[in-house]
Amino acid sequence: MTDSAKIVGWSHVPFGKLDDPDTESLMSRVSLAALEHAGVPTSEVDGIFVGVMNNGFTKQDFQGALVALADPSLAHVPATRVENACATGSTAIHTAMNFIEAGRGRIALVVGAEKMTSLPTREIGDVLLGASYYREENRPGGFVGVFGGIAKAYFERYGDRSEELAMIAAKNHHNGVSNPYAQVRKDFGVEFCNTVSDKNPYVVEPLRRTDCSLVSDGAAALVLADAETAARMKRAIGFRARVQVNDLLPISRRDPIEFKGAAMAWRKALDEAGASLDDLDLVETHDCFTIAELIEYEAMGLVPRGEGHRAIREGWTQKDGRLPVNPSGGLKAKGHPIGATGVSMHVLASMQLMNEAGDMQIADAGLAGVFNMGGASVANFVSILERER
Ligand SMILES: CC(C)(COP(=O)(O)OP(=O)(O)OC[C@H]1O[C@@H](n2cnc3c(N)ncnc32)[C@H](O)[C@@H]1OP(=O)(O)O)[C@@H](O)C(=O)NCCC(=O)NCCS
Image (cartoon, rainbow, N blue to C red; front, side, top):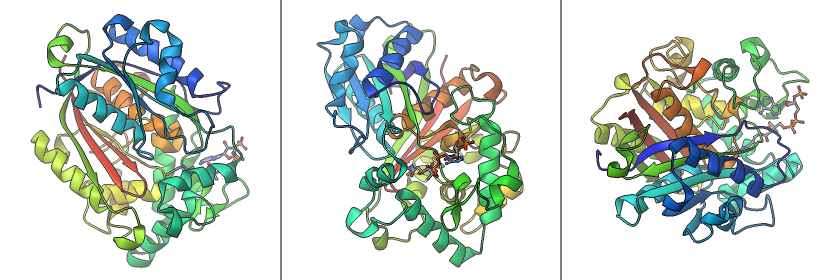
């Protein structure tokens, strides 16, 4: 896909429970910084694409119109907000790429953000359930209830994998220590993650607190340019493939532990890229819960069905393993501000490819995979990224 749009600059705030009162504040911190990183003046921006899920986190909607408040010179640039549950960020990137590749503009600013922590935990759970098939999946525990059911179904079919889930949590928390943008930079270790305690209780059995991603505030932005414009930029990350595959929203209408849409997206993306998993130097994957990462090992084709545990047990997905997965610490340690997540994953993969990932760096990273999903494998996005300059 050499004519596809390229990532030419980015910005990322550290995720966490932040003082920023709202997404307007969060977006203002990354929008101009990303343009500056790309060396692009605001006058050259042809379109702004914003990813914020919201769904009740705040009464302020119309989030696409908030970015220009950071700089009035952006006031007349067409701005559009998209929403696609936890894949909102990747959806904003795809929408901006469609805009550029259709020839409607040369440069697009993509901003993903979410302010989650202003609500109490229970209300946050209810807001997040808007990304499920609410009439059937409105369970206690918010989305933890949805993935608790998935973990239970997986254990019933393939055996109890609690210890391997703890190993995934421990791996991602270990990696998160090296990530200056991560919300939690603490190396919990397998024993803590595998022990139910006051500090690590069941949230919804069999998922413990350390099996869940965090509730976070955060924002990330990136700049996309067409191939000709990107040729004069300092950085250019190309998409060897970008794919979206959807699946039916109700979990009752599909095999809950197959993640069929994810598997189809991975197959299609690798095919489009003319690559195999062995060609990838790293993957940033959507570990909203540890059981999700385990099933994603199977969906991406790293291991056969029911054998996800082997990938973590045998060390393949560790930072020094044959396919490092979530060297950033993933959603588990970095945090998961919904609308920002997909953008963040692309930014962190781009940093790796530019050899600008600091302590997170995977040596000689040349090709990276990103998997971002909305809902329980409903909107599935895979990107295969490579450095072009
Ligand atoms: C798991 C969860 C319920 C915990 O929330 P909580 O019980 O309100 O926890 P608190 O915010 O009171 O934090 C208590 C402690 O646990 C830690 N903590 C909170 N969530 C954590 C998590 N997911 N992993 C590890 N530690 C966590 C906090 O840092 C805090 O530590 P401290 O006592 O050392 O300061 C919450 O993180 C959650 O809902 N996660 C899932 C979010 C989600 O569904 N996202 C959408 C995915 S599709």
